[in-house]
Length: 345
Image: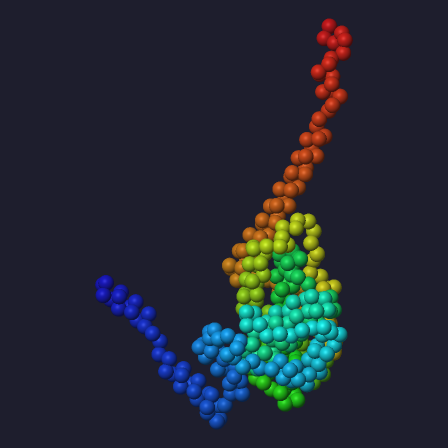
């Protein structure tokens, strides 16, 4: 019996055969009839050696930032993001210590940091996302999700992630229309292919959907259909638990994620606001904020319970102090310590 169990365990832990996968990938990359335009994206995800390589900046030939800007300027939306008022004083740098990209709002001296160890198509996409952040910061729509209640923080964080993804898809599509398909091809080979395809379907069906907000809203909604929200929820919930700046400890009423915020978030340099379309669900609907992952839901419940407990504890302390001051009757206290003459006779 013991040998049978060991034999069964051995079959379950047996190394899978990868030759079939290698042959298929080789055929897709080199075959004429199955040639993939998004080969750069495919190679980027398969070549783990280059991804994990820790070379210094001096040994790596970075893609010229001016080349990236030149390509983005061929997109109407990209040009508005890169040459509009929101880009005044904006500096763009390469920084190998930045995991992917980051926007640092500093007034008229804001900074965008990009990790240079990415393919050209991916750099175009992540630069577009950070330019969108800069544009929203100028418009007053770039808010910190931690300023809201826990549920609102999750919703705002999801909405911001969906918005920048939609913007990168929109710019990549506009670049493809003018012959610059590198950014689009990279997205087709990424895990965001479903969002990309939804946008493409609407754009091909009716070109007016590019300006009336239909294509953008379809891509925005598609972001919530997949389990990709899990990783974003996990990050914002971990920030709540760390709370190194005391956002979640600020007791009292905090602003709610209302339509006024989403109206600002849905504004575009060109075209209609895609989050205020008629006949669509409100962006504050619960379907956009429901957490299905059990681990994230448990941690969020703990955060809300802790905040509720702290508020109740503070309320009880304030009530007890007020009550203790009211029950002291100083007149009776004087009466019992110095009874009037003749009292008790």
